[in-house]
Image 1 (cartoon, one colour):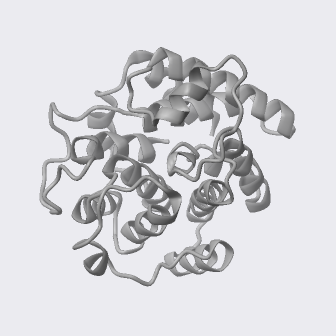
Image 2 (cartoon, rainbow, N blue to C red):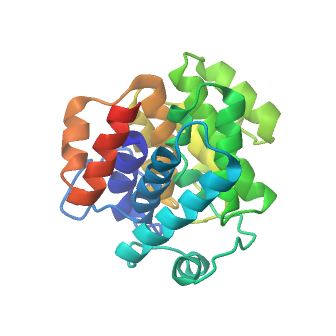
Length: 264
């Protein structure tokens, strides 16, 4: 989860096309903060830990809804979309057909908790379906969790790329130099997942992955949460970057992050 959360924090100040599309920037400044990406990443992780590794769909979805509502209400101004915050505040929350990139930014814990790619994709699908039950929203969550699972289990970048292309139909053949000039802030899975994966594929480290995100711009906190989550699983993250990132977290969020670290 460090990869997603730190990516969110670094990308937060460049969101909504506020960056200069450069790889040269200070990773952490006082303008950084965690956003809804971190809050919901923690909510999903806590729900899955509470449910238990072998729980069924009903149990996991029940825990997800409870946890996401609780964390969303605790941090109501973290930057959620309008439909999601209405879901958080609803007495009987129902999925609303979203294909937004929120399904992919919150799913990173799934890629670490399970012992098979099939189970990883199944649980990732459930984490999406409680809100983002559009096929593209589901695909976004499954693809990110699958890439993390593969990366932490020793798959090469070429193997990850081929799997994502074959299984999910994303075009990963455009280069960042081709993407950057016209790319802008969008929040759907279809125009987030391919770009996030490419930021990882063209990098040689976690830090370079995050810098690639700021080079193309757009919804930078979410792109960096997604790309950073895969990069962490592939390379790990230097301790100094982890230490700096954790300084931006509130104590309740940090407690879940540390509990998750122990769980895996």
